[in-house]
Length: 269
Image 1 (cartoon, rainbow, N blue to C red):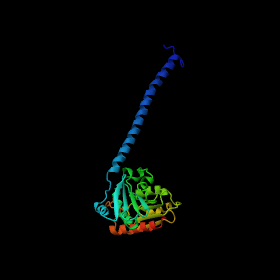
Image 2: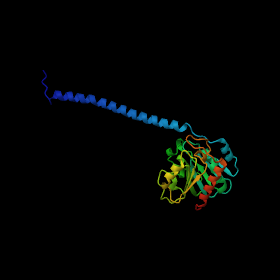
Image 3: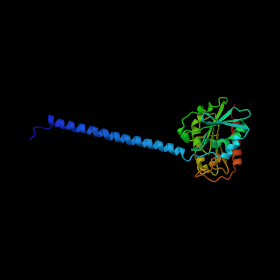
Image 4: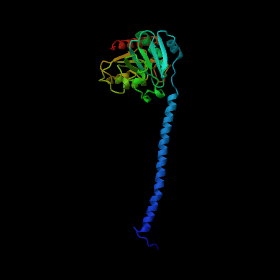
């Protein structure tokens, strides 16, 4: 028979031993849980990296070749961004443009070259990190500093790139949206805004643009281009879920150039 009684040294030693056994088990469970969490995070990061590089919509070669052969403009790459400058005198106005999700930067060269040639606007087309504007935290100055002789800057973007442009807009002199709308409130912002949309857009539909109208200043210019689809605002081919455009590429570029020219005319120089 044991002489141990509750609270005696023998009972205390048994409790201490049990507690000692539980501690390594708890540490093992904690390490397993941490390993699972880290593994899931790594899998998510790897998944995003792979997804961001798969299915990138490339610029169509024809429109891009037209820009490169146009002697009214000069296109070059500067620190990873596409810079399009007028061959003649610059107007002192620039536009930093953010591409849509997984769309190659060069796909916007043709639709923006008109305002460069006709209005002397310098255009900087960014290459967002991971091909997604939301993963690119760079400030507007990362792009405006590439062309130091330009003093007045617009910021704009297509689709998801437009959402990012809205975030950068407080540091710019104006905002340009191509088939896009803001997620942040700019209703009280003192800056000119041009929002271009398409009647046949199946992604950023006219209804979505109208539903988010209240996030823009009251005097923002909203223009719906008849016959334009979501992909009409770039040259990268058809896009899943989009409508069918009925406007020609030439008319689309002319309409966009004219709308941008009207905005540029309102800017102080």
